[in-house]
Image (cartoon, rainbow, N blue to C red; front, side, top):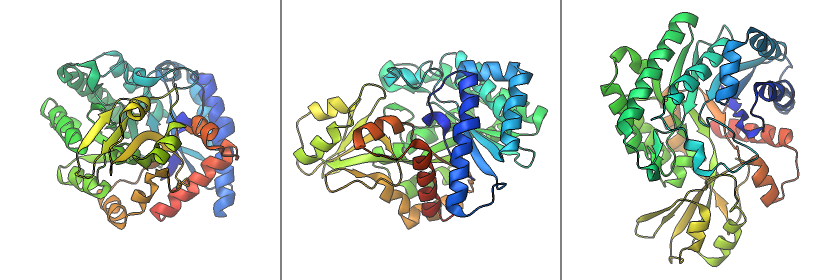
Length: 378
């Protein structure tokens, strides 16, 4: 199943999110079906995003549930995954580090994530019994939090998700999403966190625990994607879904820095890692900090700025899309057993403004989905 994450569309209220499905998701599905020569009745997977207020209202409102269920059924949309990473506002204001708040140390994460999972279970079609909910890492490292309370809250949430399975028959994988600067951020740290959660929980909960494998995040860390998939598989950790995304990359030279500087902006956090020729890595909490540091000869910069998969870049500023075409990665994906793929380019509006891309968002997302399908050999 392939979809795109609806966190690309502004809108925080349940009314706005429902309207995004009725208008924008329907339009993307129509465009993609035309691209692929598919019948109008062919199912189009849906990657939803509810913030905490929208999720709480949805589970409490039969009328809201009926409206969205009817919209999905009449337009042949099949929700199978939910993004429950950003708790609150995600567009139109400064997000930066606040995207990680409340962290998993805060009990509000429990109720929000359970509401998001319950919302997805309500919306999943009868023929789909397995879904995924992606969620934030336990914390951001500069917050200096003890991860122990976060792990306990995570375990309590898994118990609620098991209850959702018992009540609805929908098996949802709560998928922690490693991200640069967070705990966890690397594959090894992710394995550590998942194992700690398993140690604190009943074995019956382990089938609801997994990882959201965001290819841009791990590329920023200079990880080998195929190796990362294999490590998770060998550790017995399920990948709930793959988020197929790309980051920015340039050589640490004046021309590369000039091109990269166009993407320094005030809404989202753009963590940057510099890798020297000897393999040593240096972390910068945001792009301006990286650009303010003295250049290092032979080094490469990778920046957490999601760019469309069809954007290959140029000689001065590249993207990490090429890592997705690595046959070793594609082979590892097939062996992982995961069949849920979500294109996530939430920085679309910012990218369009700085890149000068002319097409509207509906055409652009459809093109990105076609690119993803080509890469993944769908």
